[in-house]
Image 1 (tube, helix red, strand yellow):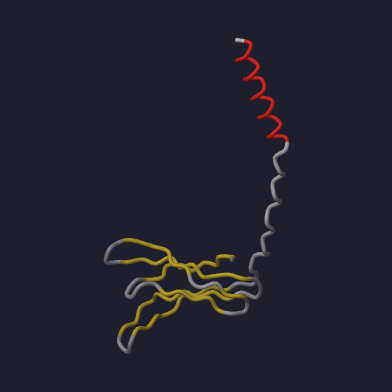
Image 2 (cartoon, rainbow, N blue to C red):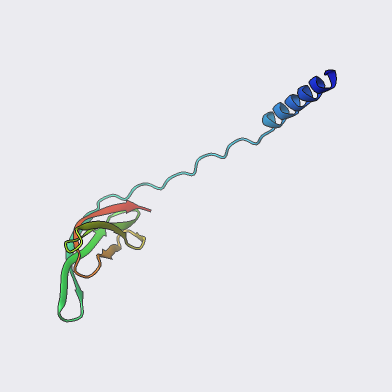
Length: 112
């Protein structure tokens, strides 16, 4: 019984010393400033000479790195979904297009 108590006590002491020697947590990574002066718009998308739908979303900001997020809607299936465009740096235009025939309901800026 004394042996078991000593083993338990030694294990507890070793465990506490390991916790005390654990390295400190790294500082959180600094976030870049959010984009400013942003404008969003929806426009007609085109595929070939005869296929057009109101499904293109674009974003342009004065500063920052960002991407466009478009909420699309399929009237045929009654379902919505979200698409993200490529990441760009100001003042470039970030664009994304809904699937053919699906309508872009809103466009949002996503900081990158």
